[in-house]
Length: 118
Image 1 (cartoon, rainbow, N blue to C red):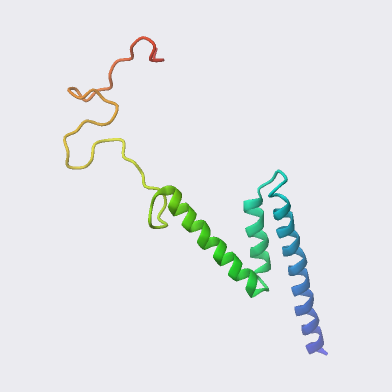
Image 2: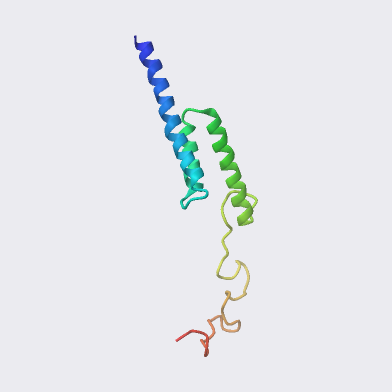
């Protein structure tokens, strides 16, 4: 008797995951043309489906790889470390003044007429 209950539980869980995950993915696909965060909802639906289905895990992994490649392309990095940060001050080991400063004194130039300063 417990074997039948176990099989019933596994089948019911699989059906519930399929219905909920499939519904979330379909809502995300509809959001591609309707207002809403489709690019967030679709991976969430795939994550729900990946609990029970190997094909959804593969799609989610592929989607993650494509997103990492796109991020690297946009940020200009070859790695997934995130965007490179520009420093405000001079490079270490140089005597150059910081950007936006007056070269001889190292101070910011005074605000002139029409510069928006007070």
